[in-house]
Amino acid sequence: MLFAFITIFQKPRFCFKICTSYVWWNLHLGLAYDSLKKFDIAKKHLDFVKKFLKENHLSKIKFAFTKQNQHLNTYPYITNNLKKYGFE
Image 1 (tube, rainbow, N blue to C red):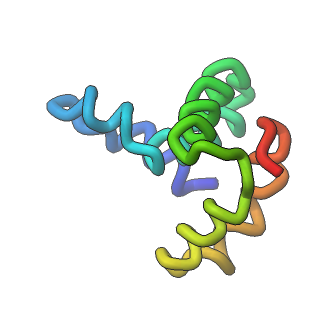
Image 2 (cartoon, helix red, strand yellow):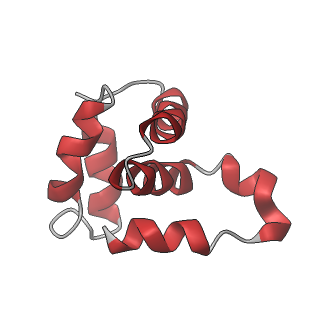
């Protein structure tokens, strides 16, 4: 989950409004807050991801992770966390 923690600290200050509407930033930030046990904040970020994707299927996230070549080293570890927040 180190990749998710790095996301919190690399947020550029000049593009805060742009970054908050970036779906993958919200996904990783939601996972980071989940591992920090800040579940309310994590839910807010992951709800944005569900709203952006217009559905809650894990297949869309797996497809994107496959295109980024992260389907083997990242996706299997985040599925349980995403299921806690309503992804199927």
